[in-house]
Amino acid sequence: MATITLSGGGAQSLPPPEDLAAGNTGTPGVWRFSSGAAGPHVAITALIHGNEVCGAHAAWQLVQTKPRPARGTLSVVFCNLEAYSRLDDATKGDRRSVDEDLNRVWGRIDAATGSETYEMRRARDILPHLQGVDVLLDLHSMTTAAPALGLVGLAPKNVAFAKQIGFPALLVRDAGHAAGLRLIDRAPFGDAAAAPVAMLVECGEHFSREALVAAEEAVRRTVAVFIGGERVAPAAPQAVIEVTQAVTIQTDSFEFVQEWPNMSLVPRAGTLVARDGGREIRAPHDGTYMIMPASARNCRPGQTAVRFGRRTG
Image (cartoon, rainbow, N blue to C red; front, side, top):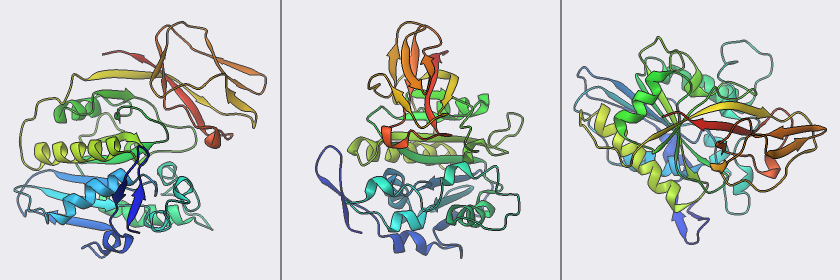
């Protein structure tokens, strides 16, 4: 793998899969840099989905600096190495996973199963390196153009984390997906009473220059604050949007009534936004945000079609 074509034109060099996989911990794709001094353990995860390359770009830039933390420990984890290794321009839309979504397995990982997918095996490899982490930054991208979004779950501590690094401008409080537990929702990150914090940053559209830049910014700020002990000003005023309803697809005939851009605002309650078989799906309240509506190719039963949100802060 050398370059990938960006959605807005031009090309971007990507780190070779074998370089990411080398690691320095004995586990492929896992890198750790320790100061030997007291301080937080910060983990940056990229490539939970193999075609979300902004995270690989930003995290690999960090690894190449051979960081020497002044305090604490820094871990960088490149997750779905197999899906990423199959990525090319012709198939980049299909390289999200190998067998299943790696960001839906974290509630099942502790249960013994007879046959396991690549993603479940990979999650078991990664998990020991995430135990004891104090701060988790999980880097992703989206199928459509949108500003960067910080998904912070429901625990207030994760909103505070996002505000501490001052990025991104839009923070989304949500309960995740019916299809399975995300990494940021797994205990202790999703436990409001536990100290460790986590945020999933949707950096922008897949393969966009904007997503690459946003991933770099998220990494820079997280390292500066928690490893460098710096204070940083917000990149822009931050707003909190709370998910009021997640729409899970129930039939094979789901369709939106029109194209809804990511983070578009539906002014009036009751506006028809989609149909799912005989079920009409309407905006639940005035000022409804359409958060990450699924593309037509991803509208399958059991998947999240869209999350409705309302600004609360």
